[in-house]
Image (cartoon, rainbow, N blue to C red; front, side, top):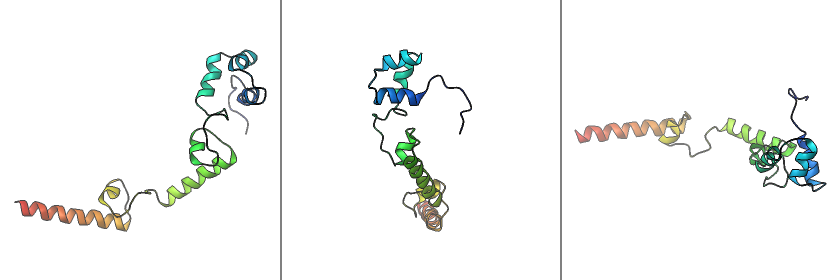
Length: 125
């Protein structure tokens, strides 16, 4: 897919120079005509440099900016799982019902809580 905007410098080239050629950040910045800050900022957030902590093939890798095929597949699988069960918490509780779940178990738990609450209120009067 073609880029919509012109980027200031080529991330892939910078990554290749850092990993394969073992260039310093300053040398990369000088070579690509950008500031050292631009290169180190990209390096520090871990999105483009492979030597930063990132577990490939996980949703966490995708959230940290990796778009390799295995990370995209893992993120899609996690999204599909959340669509099927949007509340991966313990169903059948008032708290999950209050959070928005309307499954039968959570609805029943909320109804029972309401009944018990009204009983306590009547007993206190």
